[in-house]
Image (cartoon, rainbow, N blue to C red; front, top):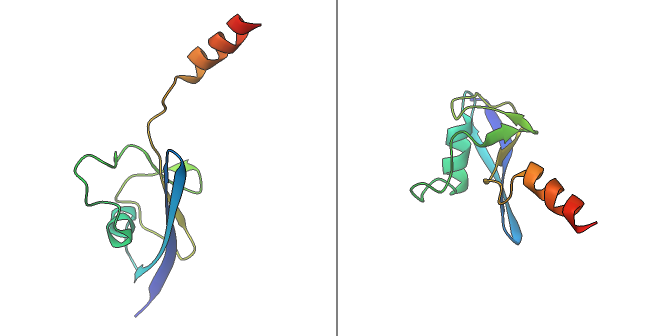
Length: 90
């Protein structure tokens, strides 16, 4: 039986959690997140904020060996607002 080994990364304020998991071939992003233990909390992970190596994907995206699943968190501050604030301080 073929397997895929992937990393699952979840960046939280002040820390980054990294877990390596081994799954059966044909596993999805959602399977990896659950296997890493990040999917238990209700509402913790937004299915619209997932990626593999910086490219947005859906929870149903099939995985390949060596993929890095990334769980993104919402932005605290809109980048446009941040630039305006910096420009206003000059």
